[in-house]
Image (cartoon, rainbow, N blue to C red; front, side, top):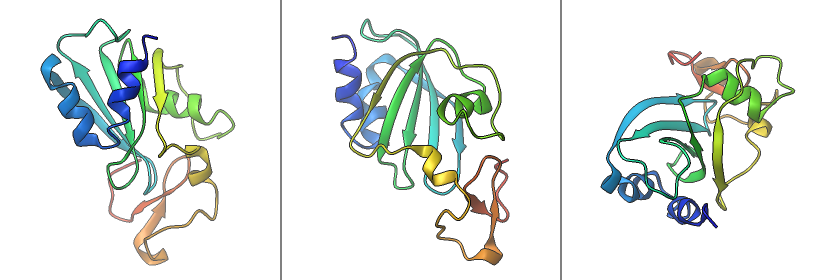
Length: 146
């Protein structure tokens, strides 16, 4: 199965492990998005695409500790809110074009990211030091994240 190498890469379970695993293909950091305290998307573009990938863009989704939850392989860099609309179609704060996801694998760290965005979600921040983010979840009150 073509996704087996991608799954093995994800199963390193760490952002460092994934980045080390694609080092031979060359990569550059494109963007990084935080959604709440417990979900981060690191977007990279590979310089050389290996035969086992159907695209050259990877979104490495991690938890707050850099533990890999999933990797999506895309043909192009997605619009952030379109990606989140794909993940959480019932959330009215997310809208945008559908991402061009060509392969996707999950790890033992995966959980439904929509669950972390619901009202009343737990937070490590005290109420006076946090603000609710677009779509849900909390960020530091001085964060630049939308």
